[in-house]
Length: 293
Image 1 (cartoon, helix red, strand yellow):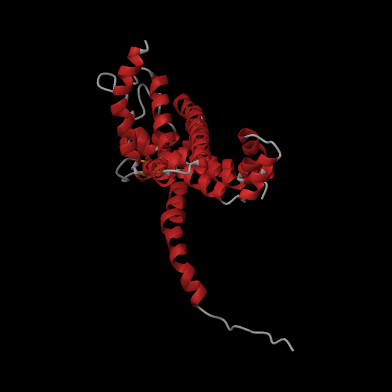
Image 2 (cartoon, one colour):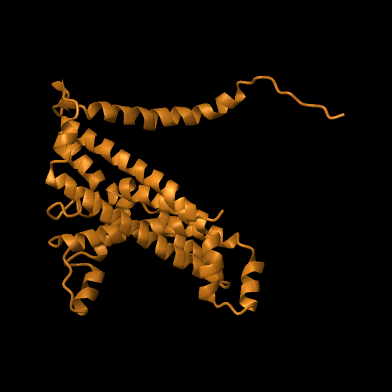
């Protein structure tokens, strides 16, 4: 006769999840709710005079050409960073999965950039592409191109995109490599015996099998581009020249901390949060359909 085991109520599960719930409440729910509340206020930088203005901050935002321009810049920046970081990480992971001699050293060198702080990553690229001292600037000059990101908004945007993508490649590389190494080698060998070349094996076997990892990294990279690239832009261009690299997250800081317009800054942070949530929902709703688990 099968005996059923019953466990009485216990406080242990609640104690185990309590730290995570507390962290979520303190570092996400409470700041987000404060930002939503403050977005309906008009107040000075010191908080001495406060007026409840309902949706006036949002109406002012969407009638501001500089804010609308920052949305377009953010779209270009985030899409470029996600595409470049995922593409290069996928290529490097495919190469690392085939390396036999010196594979550990090769993988370790590719992981190192992930340990670099965003500010340092930005500073490295600033030094390499400095208009007067940068080694890459001299290389471009020898090829006949005069690089100066301090004067050209397009070059400044290219610089922050490259720096942000380079910083994220190592993170993506780790996940892609782990996913590729989890694929049974018998599938790859069977395809090779059937005459499939390396490119066809990757396109028809490897890439479809790592699609869950690709989808996960797509979501993570979009969130990274929207939020975690602030330090890179602050260290490299500070939103310049002429606001050419002032994406949404940097404009929140520039208008709030630097400009003292707390209500507008809070409204911008709410809009940014809503956009990221909508993008994540869209990705899970439509992109996930193509993922083969």
